Length: 90
Image 1: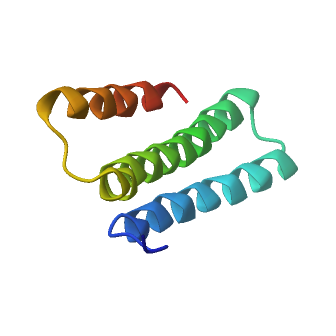
Image 2: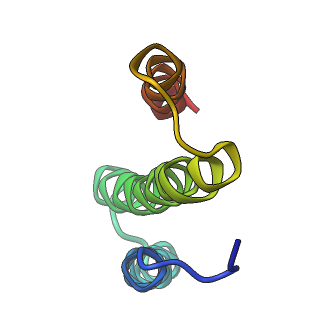
């Protein structure tokens, strides 16, 4: 299991987007922008980080766990697929 995956560049892109949003929020607070605008931007930060986390978890399930477990029949695969679906609630 390698520490770097095909999805990592996309995750970095999402996190850099979140970083940019967060910098904007800090500037907005310092300049006295409205709470509604701040809340909207904070929501964008949360979504970007959440999407990065989901992508990372799904990539881990799809590659690392499957690689460790090895070939599976349909019934065994169903458990891993269910876990993948459950992970969206993390």
